[in-house]
Amino acid sequence: MKLLVTGGAGYVGSVCAARLAESGHEVVVLDDLSTGHADAVPDGVRLVEADINDVIGDVLAEGYDGVLHFAAKSLVGESQQEPAKYWHGNVGTALALLDAMVEHGTPRLVFSSTAATYGEPDAVPIAETAPTRPTNTYGATKLAIDHAITGYARSHGISAVSLRYFNVAGAYGRFGERHTTETHLIPIVLQVAQGKRDQVAVYGDDYPTEDGTCVRDYIHVVDLADAHLKALDHAEAGEHRIYNLGNGLGFSVRQVIDACREVTGHPIPAEVSPRRSGDPAVLVASAERARTELGWKPERVELTGIVRDAWEFTRSQEAR
Ligand code: UDP
View 1 (cartoon, rainbow, N blue to C red):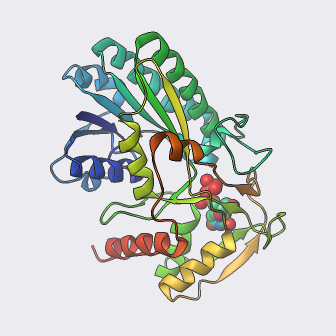
View 2: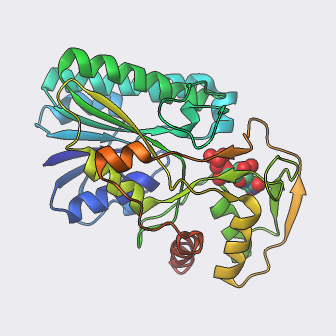
């Protein structure tokens, strides 16, 4: 298939573009490089460096079998401080993309959604039927896009799948996580092991969990990318399907730090700090629907393996 990957110079987008290209698809990346990196675009993949809003009509006019839409702003804290950046940047851009898909008859869409659409859960594991009550602007914009996709798919015969990611981690060879502003736990802990930070702050140890720290569902980025490949051919025309992607396994902040100590051999000093506002105690996915309907099964579920891949990537960046 000829596929457009928006945000394909970013973390998840670049891994997905690489896996798609390796599976024989013709891939074009559209990215404005606001947070992505040109050298994260896989070899043999064309990069269109531009703002989606400026060029999406011209690009889709070339004729595509589908779009995988990753390009988005994704910092929760920033979304609270600068909501306009998220409503225009995420929702406005997604609408421009959907309009162009309708205009040029692009038949398929796979959308990068998030567990943040659910907010604080009533029960875990979280299934797709759980109430969607996002607690931040980032999650609200992704949920708004999911609603827009449902309507566009139904009215215009687009086959659409939204994938709601839990905590994505790990790396795929030279494709990995390199954010200028890093807020995620595993890269931050690995920065301590690299000597770039003195210690890691553990945001709260008085949660109702076994060791008092928050529990999250860490999913390997390659397993996540492979779900996108399966999703491409999945929905019928006019249908919008939604799948959670997680391992269904929860790991606490302390377990993550221990896994990083084991992998890196670094003592990784950790200090308990106040809770981070808006953090639910436990977020674990039920990915049963993806397993049964997409035939997807995460293969890289061990936390140390996920951390090892992230660590190898981190060290390879240092050596550059
Ligand atoms: N966390 C932490 N210290 C940090 C960064 C994160 O204790 O420096 C905790 C955070 O409170 C959450 C978990 O690690 O419970 C995962 O956070 P992350 O930002 O990686 O992902 P989120 O679950 O917020 O999407």
